[in-house]
Amino acid sequence: MITIDADLQDDPDKIPEMIEHYKNGCEIVYGVRSDRQTDFWFKRNTAESFYKLMNQMDVTMIPDSADFRLMSNRAVYALLKYSERNLFLRGLVPQLGFQARKVYYQRMAQLAGETKYPFKKWLVWRSMELRH
Image 1: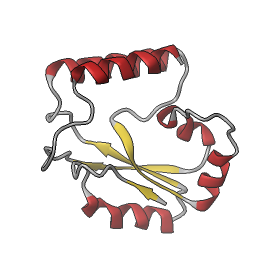
Image 2 (image 1 turned 90 degrees about the vertical axis):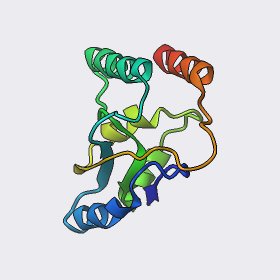
Image 3 (image 1 turned 30 degrees about the horizontal axis):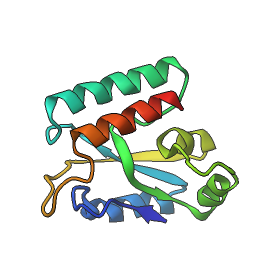
Image 4 (image 1 turned 90 degrees about the horizontal axis):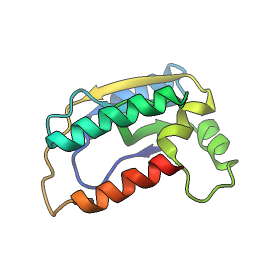
């Protein structure tokens, strides 16, 4: 299973590379941003602080990855065993313990529409993540 945001910012040209890692035995392949140039200053810095804080709390995360990932059937079924309704996938998927790789890509600017996470909504979302 490959998940990718519909806003066309993640690089679908990286999917064959993800599949190649899967064929070579990886159960999870993370799409990881090579930089955060498309983020505004505040978001870039709070994201960095968030990853540092989570690391201090011993939560294993893949910095600069989001929802662009490949997961094998085994990994998906392991994830489905969690009974929670509001899963924090960025923190949970690395905890599954499967062999994983990273594929780096340059995130593109949003081509159409407008963000579903304007600053105020994004700030509320981040504060909710920190409480969980």
